[in-house]
Amino acid sequence: MKKGIAILGSTGSIGTQALEVIENYPDKFDLQVITANRNADLLIEQAIKHQPNTVVIVDESKFEQVKSALWEHEIHVYAGEDALAQVVEGNEIHTVLTALVGYAGLKPTLRAIEAKKTIALANKETLVVAGELVTKMARENGVNIYPVDSEHSAIFQCLVGDFENKIEKIYLTASGGPFRGYTKDQLAAVTKAQALKHPNWEMGAKITIDSASLMNKGLEVIEAKWLFNLRPDQIDTIVHPQSIVHSLVQFEDGSMKAQMGLPDMKLPIQYALTYPERFKTDFPRFNFMDYPQLTFEKADADTFKNLNLAYKAMEMEGTAACALNAANEVSVQAFLEEKISFLAIADINEAVLMQTPNSLSPVYEDYVNTDKLAREKAWEMVKNFNK
Ligand code: NDP
Image 1 (tube, rainbow, N blue to C red):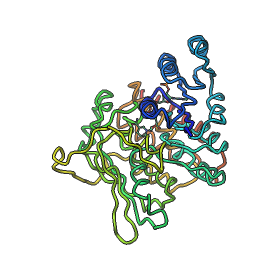
Image 2 (cartoon, rainbow, N blue to C red):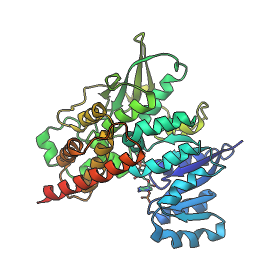
Image 3 (cartoon, rainbow, N blue to C red):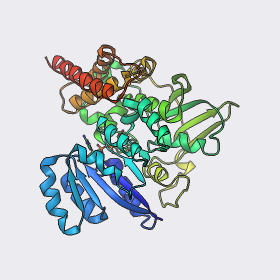
Image 4 (tube, helix red, strand yellow):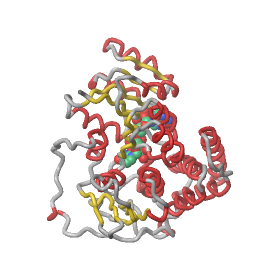
């Protein structure tokens, strides 16, 4: 039987690669839903090509455009945030791939879990914001969350066959981004164009900036805590500029398992959709002769303080990581709009994390309120940085 798939955020970097994966196995996957925020043109093009049952455009002003382009193709069209959350409940959907960016992923992911859909999770912010609630609901509903993030997919792949054995620690690898080795003085002057040039991966703008500021690794540390039920002291990071070793698990007997391969997000996307099977691909293969050296070094968390802020937020528990995430979404947006400098991103994140009230044992509304408050504070700070 074909697996029904919904892709939330089909017009993004992960979403478009997921469509390529699905297109390669027409007898295995049945594309049910695709969604976009504002990019109506690409959403229409994707819908005509891939013929899903339903599309959602979040921006309601684009509804008529999408509707009129797709009516003759007999594709259902909906608009708005509520539609995005509702559409995951369709009976034909088996797996929801959360490929949208940021806090916006939380609500539809929770709805998909309630509807007992398997989650292929790219949207790490969902676990950063509300990992406690999301994993609790997944347990209660018997829902599996399979990671798409390459590092977490690597950890997951290392654990296959070893689920009963205790993890001593994990190492999440990091490329170090475009500013690896930079001093604070050098970072003070870096531009948006420089920050958007990732050495090894082509990704959406937000995660590319997060990679340059090491916030991405911080978010991944929090994501790993929830996905693999680990204490913060069991999660370490190691800079590996070649991005060939995608992450490692160290078991209690000291044995280490690593997952390797050329950097290509299509592989972890596909594995999250096909687990426990592996489908044959024609992706380029790794050649040892092209990489005579694989190197490892310590992350410079003094210069790139976002990484330590993530550990701080985990230590604080409650809604602290939600506040940090909100601050970071605002500060990254402000940097992309050239309103603040690169170093101001971490300064704003730190100030908002420390100043936003922390709700312990949070319920859904606490996350919503914290996100709102932290965003307001962060925008205030952006204005002050501008003065
Ligand atoms: P992109 O910015 O390329 O794409 C984001 C997608 O989400 C687009 O389809 C966009 O629609 C949609 N979207 C944006 N804002 C909203 C919103 N408010 N409501 C609903 N939909 C929205 O992001 P990426 O593909 O790079 O990243 C997606 C997620 O995957 C992120 O959480 C990221 O951290 C994670 N990830 C990405 C990797 C990568 O290689 N790109 C690697 C590992 C993880 P529109 O096009 O209309 O704006």
